[in-house]
Image 1 (spheres, rainbow, N blue to C red):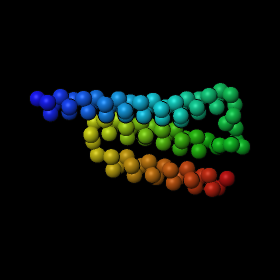
Image 2 (image 1 turned 120 degrees about the vertical axis):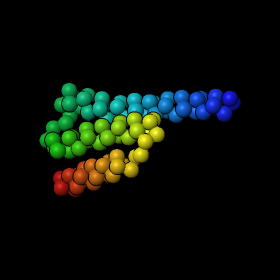
Image 3 (image 1 turned 30 degrees about the vertical axis):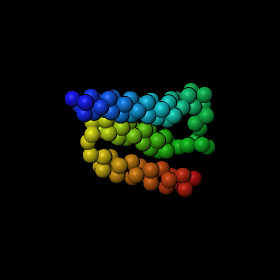
Image 4 (image 1 turned 180 degrees about the horizontal axis):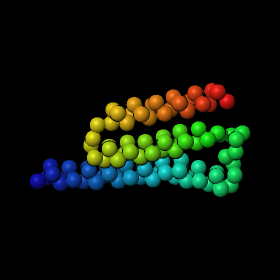
Length: 96
């Protein structure tokens, strides 16, 4: 019984940590992108449309990764997708 109690506590703490991580990612990427768009800081000189799409896709993939982590599912495919998007973003940065 004690073992299951600590298992439940651990899962709750694990989920809480991941929910906080998700909120931090949303704040860091999604909300900051929305603020920059409304203020007008994201013009063609700073970031092109392709880079913005990649950035938003990365945020969605990171959120999906956290969700899979909460559900204790395999992360290998999502990690591959994330690394591919990061490489695309690096290539876009180098082209500029």
